[in-house]
Image (cartoon, rainbow, N blue to C red; front, side, top):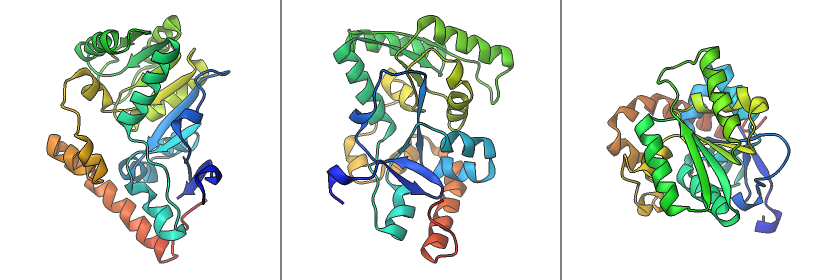
Length: 250
């Protein structure tokens, strides 16, 4: 399929994955739209967690994070999907905000990390006005905590709300509160906050080029070994799809 004819989305295991250039996503518009990413890890969680599955399926734009999730499409349909790594998505929208002048809000991470991100933004993107909030570090938020986060975002009125909690907490939070947020876009980007703030050294581009970013992250953060069962579940579903005992699309 020619690039100009590329499908807007590709359905993989019931998820409509975005298959266009990021530049086609408008920043302006009515309401708050959600941008989430999907990879084997969050897919594995969603298999047994209906709330995660609902949040992903109802994303306005569901991006392919990395290359491995597209195996379900590539091996069963011969169709590739445009990959958009979290750092690339973040950089893309920050650069667009810088060009036009805009407002960004960072929700997530520790207070010191949020402050570092504000300092980096002031230097790197002087045309962006930014602020942020560090939510409580806990698996679930109370109604009062959620209300406080929504109020902080709405008081600032950002063009883009970047959410840096762990997956799938960030995706579920964005989905549950999109209709209450005075923002144009929410973008769930997870570990990008640590890289952008300088808390963790960014991965070298070669890792992405070699399709081994997952391995480099595992070396950086050995605790990610706990996600291996999710990856294996995803690969098992891919094998089932190839053998035609599981549908590869909805």
